[in-house]
Every structure is written in structure tokens, then in C-alpha cells.
Image: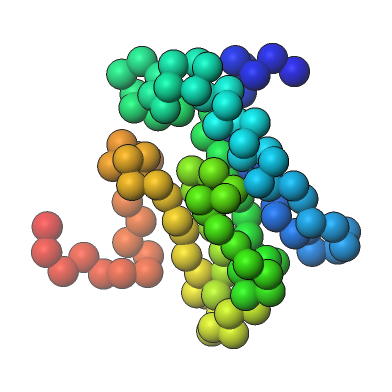
Length: 118
């Protein structure tokens, strides 16, 4: 697999039914090393790393220690309802600050929140 053709790596930290813990820290180190070789932390004018790294931590947050710094992930998503014992429909998304500032939504969805002021 040619890493220059990869835009994003998404991996589940702990799959629901497999009984394994994926090596997210080691994967993050490999992606970070590749991004460093490919021009530092930025590619061209996009200010985005060559390969973005997203970790699904729905089964791990609240069960084991989770560190975005150790994972070297650019984003991490998790649900609040499982091991954090939050209500259904809750969750969070961590995105590194310098990446979050470059993202634009593809569309704005007002299904869950009414427009009060434009």
C-alpha cells in the first residue's frame, strides 16, 4: 500500500466483538513519522497533515486509559452512553486545534437545533 495515496486512517481502538485492543499508539507513531517525512505537519497550503488519523474510542473511553497525545491521533470520537454512563445520544469529538480551524462543514443541519438568529 502506497502511503502517499492515503488521506485518512480510521481505526476502532477496541472493536465491540473481537476481544482485542488495536495498537493505536503504534499506528499513530507510524503516521506521525510519515507525515514528518512528507513535509512536516503541513502539506502544501492546506495546513493539514498528509495522512489524518481518526480513532474510534467508543468502547475504550471509560474502560481503559486513553491519551490522544500518546495515540498521536488528529481526531478521536466516542460515545457518552456506554462506559461514561451518559444518556443516549451523547458523545464527543476531539480534534486537534490547528486542524479544527481548517475544517468547514459540508452542510449545516438544523434538525436538532432551531435557527434563532442568522
